[in-house]
Image 1: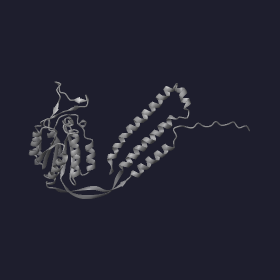
Image 2 (image 1 turned 45 degrees about the horizontal axis):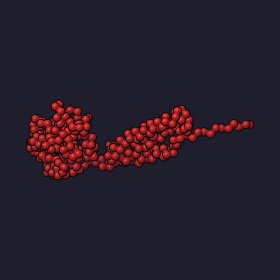
Image 3 (image 1 turned 30 degrees about the vertical axis):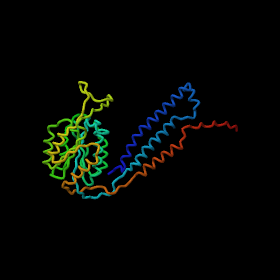
Image 4 (image 1 turned 135 degrees about the vertical axis):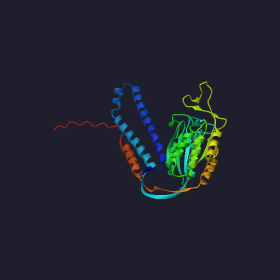
Length: 340
């Protein structure tokens, strides 16, 4: 099994685009400067020692050095020893609303960002519990099956956005059904579901799906995010607020009644997420810890071999090569005729 020990460093690879743009900008500036001086053919003769090929080659070396340097910092590892570890915990599936109404900023910086912060803090509190992730809007999908790899779970969480589900809406009922199917069907306990949503659209199937899930042993907790008074929805296309067909500003409101009803049907708790995220997380963790826990064994890698030194070595070698390659090519001295 391969993994990156510090996968968060891989985001630095996006800076490769910045390097490429800088290279194109410098190349454009050089060509523009030559045209300003005079006739390009004559100017090229003045810079007879300059080699564009060497300039491009040096950039490629820096580009590759940066790439391998980032991989080195992320530290690619391969599992070398596997052991079976027995844990006690609960299976927790988090169903996250990613509809565009979650972009409302009645809670700063916006509903979706605050919900992701809550999930991240919740994972920090879950020691031996397996966690899964379901995302939903007009449809619901299992984004990540149950796992104890919290670092992988947070990586999945970081990719969540409203663009991943084109169908808009708030299909809470379908999200509960998909979450129920993610659990072990052979068990009738040790299952907790956490639904995070503004509950804006009323879903008539939600209560029935919650009762069905409870019959399968799933305790459903809900977290409402947003304000009851509501907030206008930002429209990225216009840079203003979203309008309806009559030209009125669309207001997204928290539907607490539906979320409270779901929690009651699932024998769980409802909480309203405001600016105090820690209190919500602690209450939810206490609720999960109070559930009957199960023992489960998993084969996990307990020892890894690291390969960062190879990537950093390649990075250093490329930088050294780039340093000793001149951008200007020295012209050869003409040979003198030798008279015998």
